[in-house]
Image 1 (tube, rainbow, N blue to C red):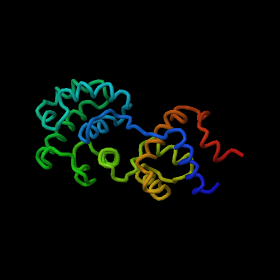
Image 2 (image 1 turned 30 degrees about the horizontal axis):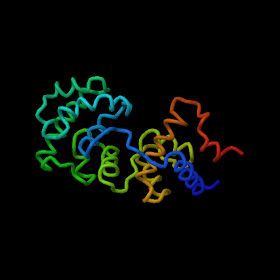
Image 3 (image 1 turned 90 degrees about the horizontal axis):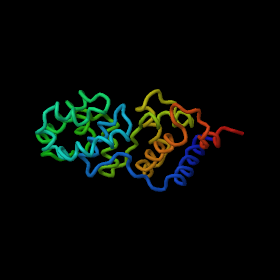
Image 4 (image 1 turned 60 degrees about the horizontal axis):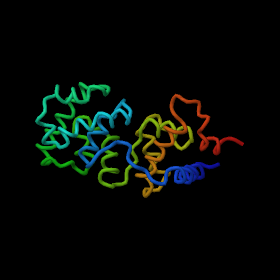
Length: 206
């Protein structure tokens, strides 16, 4: 099976499994999406979704977040890993949104990645799921599966993102990256043995 055929197989099978792709992080607008994605680093989406309702109730806008002290933000997100750093980033992120962008989440990678706690992956999620721009955010699930499916030889998520964009059509990027994440969690978890990973078996088992 060629790389092109493997990529087509991935699209076909994932469309069957996940015809709709709700964003796994609960949010109401681009700002709360950006906050949720920033909080999700080294933490499960499930844990983030448990914490953000109380956070967004008191700080669901940059204006309200900026008014809180770091220790108050930390208290609201203390169950999440790296809460000290994330609390500091969330406060400064809100302040810079007010100073530079009138409290509105910008729609360019350069401006997004200049905000504290917003790396390329977070910016890509905001651009794709918050604003609808074609993007292919790569997390550890996607990097691992793209390698497993021999669709990339990338050593890191940056190289894997480049390969994903080259092999999959742009119009499916926003949906497909979520489909791969869902598949990784359900059929090929990082700590599992891959028994349920039928896509890999279809590709390589004779």
